[in-house]
Image (cartoon, rainbow, N blue to C red):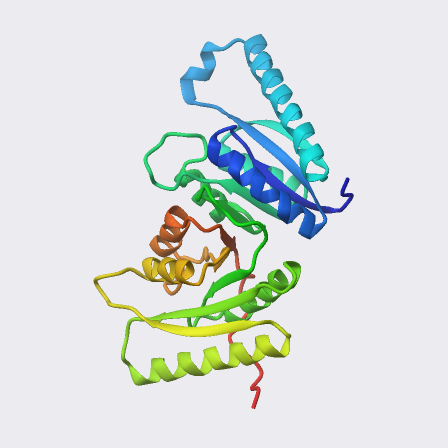
Length: 295
């Protein structure tokens, strides 16, 4: 079994989508040399929980723990990784973030049904709240069919200050997966010459930077059609075209930040992507805009 200080937290409600997320975590655990911790949150639903006695609540917890332990044993045999289990009670997204901090998780891998209207435990709103609250990277899994491993990482970029941080994280992932290709992409909704030139120059610098790190990469600017397709739709269409295995985005909690991947764009990507989405919260107040001039 894998013995490591790296830990992957997998919130589980035994639904099909959360079990698919668990399957995806196997490969990550092997690549990261990490342990998996299965977490089930017994949600407190207002006045309804008052109808259950203390004994009944304990019985529910014991039954859930029994099912988790059985699943953990099966996963250990199948994936040859160490699996731990935890049962918590409370708000789903709060407990996930709390446990991630408690066990010092390397990342969270969770299933999401997006906004398809199905009232299951890990519906889109909870996944988005976890992404927003979590201090560690979160991979959300909505699609049902995924290739093993990771050959193509889709990295959307704009002119925001976190560009270098995004690229550094992508390099780390590429090397982790044995040299995955990084597909850098920017969506352009303007013909403003200054913006076009600046973005083109930045993509060139990023490509050179990646190549110096011996990373196979491509860099492309997509001309978006304003009013017909959203930013997220353009990114998702591109990700499918290049057979992406992972889309890497950064979230932003600052209320005055109005650029890339905040609010509706991040939600749309997470809710609609059939490809796993890795959401990373940027480091606070650190200007990581520029790359060293390669020329």
